[in-house]
Image (cartoon, rainbow over all chains, first blue to last red; front, side):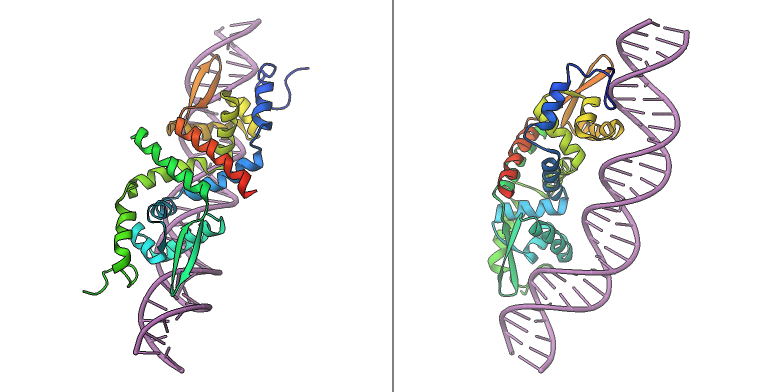
Length: 121
Length: 121
DNA sequence: TGCACACATGAACAGTTCTTCAGGTGTGGT
DNA sequence: ACCACACCTGAAGAACTGTTCATGTGTGCA
């Protein structure tokens, strides 16, 4: 029995590790879902919105538009994606809608990511 | 003095919070850099590669290609981006190159992100 | 030296993404 | 009732992204 259909010829010693990497804890579907989460954080406009909310706690769309220096339309589109994903939530007060971070884990990710700046310069 | 050039008409009570959100800790440039980091994690293939490395510690390209079920060429392209960003590093051994996570913060982010799965279902 | 394997790289193409523009909803003031 | 404001939404176009295909580099083996 020679090598299988896929991958490199050396399979005996690494098969166990490959299996471990594939089966344990994070399934392909889960990794894809987490990638989706990271993808939402991986846009300059959305990231700046989120960090602004992390600092300020709660801001309306026009304040966000002002803080991030992006058109209110673009902010609205960005917030819709974040809202749909449950990352932010809005609260209407008069004509304004105040947005806040709505996911504790995302808050932790944002906090933790700031540490990255100090090291990588 | 009426409202400024930008944003909503209500500016007095929120000006301080907007300023805080803009000035404190995370600058626009930093947020953009962090977005770039998240963007790299925000692709299914790259995310699966990273979680595989998180589990297995060290894997060669063909093992990764097998584990993630993506062509070795696609893996190579993905690894190049991650390598350039300092997220992974390669070690040559014979004809194979073994990759590993090279950034402690990214490792933390990946670990922390897994918690997200438990809550959001 | 020659071949096979593991991996890298460049070009090209399909799919996706983000912004802007134009128009729509809902709320408050007069 | 009307208008202005804060915000939302759909369509459209430019820019970007990720994969595949074809080819190139480097290592080990005979």
